[in-house]
Length: 227
Image (cartoon, rainbow, N blue to C red; front, side, top):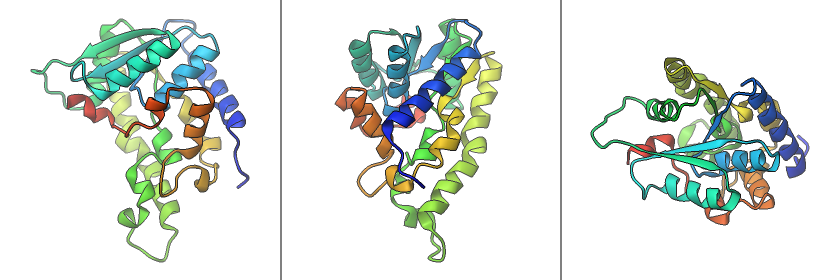
């Protein structure tokens, strides 16, 4: 594959983001903002495109890492921001249930989400340790790991997400998934190596002046909102 440049990636993500927003028919929408690199890039793109949005962040308390980093980005970009602190008494069966409960609670029926980019650009630790995921020495372990995560995406993430989106009558836009043809063709050397994951996305984040604290923070999954 030819080397991908960040300008091309930015253009594609911008187009897919606008495409996702257009499906909301001009109605208000929110961005599920974890304060991680994936959703922070989407917030930065929306801001640069002058598209109005409200970010929603969910956490177990005010000191949760997602809330801290989402607030760093909010101060940097100046968008509207709603925060949902989970009740300690409530025990959910799925983190998506908490997220969509919060989204519906703030009155939104449309959301942009950064889901699916980890599967395509190597967001999991096993992308850096493919030998721990695949024991066979007769296959391209890294390629196998990427393809396995991609194949598991519907069952592990998209179907649970759709379940709760339907429950709360929320339309979900997935711009990274919309860009899947490009993202899955980015050379693996630009996606992950032994020192970092989602390499090209981090390069784009630096170019877009996403705060370094967000770019370099350790990855947390959505389930961390219970911590």
